[in-house]
Image (cartoon, rainbow, N blue to C red; front, side, top):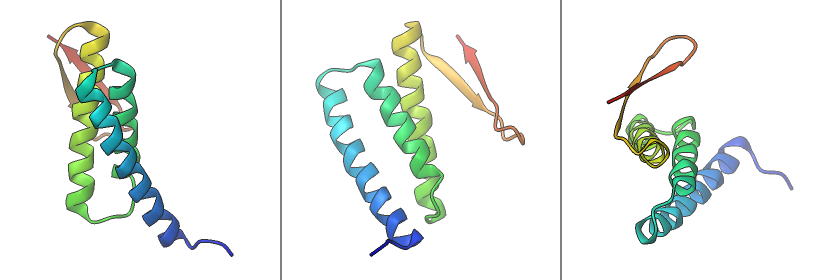
Amino acid sequence: MGFDDQACSSMTIRLLLAANEELESVYRLKSEACVALALSRNYSLLAQTKTILPDRFSWKNKTKYWWQEYLKHCTGKNVDLLFLHAESGAMLELVK
C-alpha cells in the first residue's frame, strides 16, 4: 500500500517539526553550529512544502534565523543576510 503525495507530505511535515523541536532543545542546552545548520536546513525544507502561506512564511523566517546562528558560530560575528528574490534564488551575505 503506497502513500499519496498529500499524506506523504503531511507525514514529512510532522516529522520535520518533531525533529526541529528536539534540535531546538539540544541547541538550548549546548549551542553548536551543526545543530543550527540542521535546523536551518529543516526549516528550509518545510518552507518549500505546499502548505498555507503563513506557515511557509514563518518557516522561511526561521530558516534565516538559524542560518544566522550557524554563521555566527562559524565567523564569530553577527551576520546580516539580504535574500534576493532573483530567478536564481541567490543569497548575498553582508558581514558587519
